[in-house]
Image 1: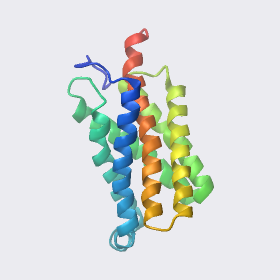
Image 2 (image 1 turned 90 degrees about the vertical axis):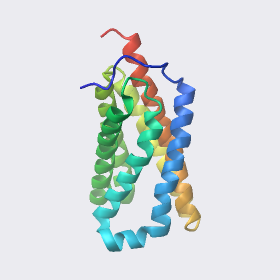
Image 3 (image 1 turned 180 degrees about the vertical axis):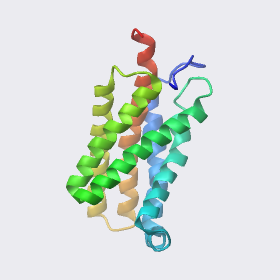
Image 4 (image 1 turned 45 degrees about the horizontal axis):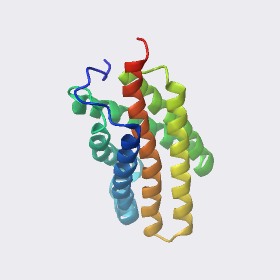
Length: 196
């Protein structure tokens, strides 16, 4: 079932979607990365590697679903959108984790970012019934995800913890969140202007 429905208010502008997504997801990412900076050892000891990653994924979904849900204007948007967003983000994160642990740090991060971004784009496009711009959605998500992640990783590698880890989270969140905001704008706008 598509999330797309009769809009209850105007679709936010592209600039607003990018700003809301970038700033909102940067704050969420800062919170999640703070748990890595200050509690990673405790989480790994009590929940193991897989459990810790699942907690971090759940935090991303719970905290950022409302940020991105504010950009969705269809009726009853938040409950449906939260499910769609949870599915999209979990698919992205699961693929990223598999690539990272199977292929190693550099190659795994690139492959995970690429395949995860493609999966997220497909899920958003299908959920909103906007499959025509799927290549554009994939490119926007991947480029911003890749750039944000590797700028963040460079900050992390050059600045001691915990500041490096916190800046990693902000950079990753700012760029990837801006891209998710842009994608949510596109998937809502394009079904209205393209023939069904």
